[in-house]
Image 1 (spheres, rainbow, N blue to C red):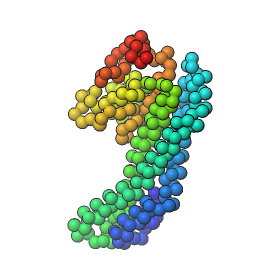
Image 2 (tube, rainbow, N blue to C red):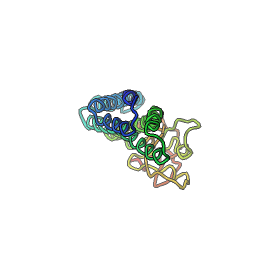
Image 3 (cartoon, rainbow, N blue to C red):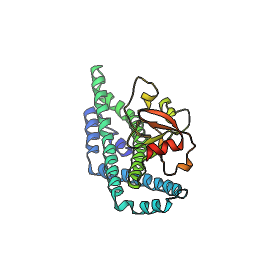
Image 4 (cartoon, one colour):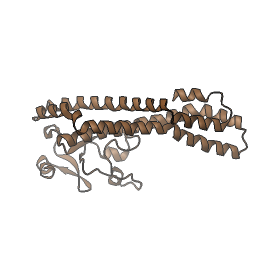
Length: 254
């Protein structure tokens, strides 16, 4: 986005500013940058998550099977998942300038109604752009990185036949109340919870997995070894969080 910021310097017509942003968003150069950035992010998350899986496999009785599955996964459905996630994130990155163009257009309309001169509006936009673009980019980075991490974990779990995960939080003061409620809860991939509804909040965001909502820093820890769980454990089952012994959990998880 720094490159786009430089293109806006010296423009005195608000329409030129908007058109420059839109042209940049649709340019071949930005398309390549967006794809490269998306591929770097997805590849990094894929590699880092694989390291976590290998560490967990060392403590699991089926460790060899897990190792072999991880080694082969790029030749199977996981390769297609990585490609899909890369394309998805590239599209989100490419939408950033267009989102900003929309905000700029709204700003131009508001200031024009106030009688602000065009050259002054252009100056305002150029000064506002770095702050607006950085804030929007940071939000996208936090949210989409978390979503991608969850998607990769889910794809691996499906590939390895792991049906459950443990909802982990960042364990600090910034964790929202509804997600504090989900801390260390066992969740089935096929049955995501609605944390806000479980917490009794009036505003909810539907059912989703850890990391799959805006600004969420929670993550999914695959449940591949029941020996590593502190029993009794809290389990999300039949629409509520229940305390279960290992035997009770094994009956519903089979």
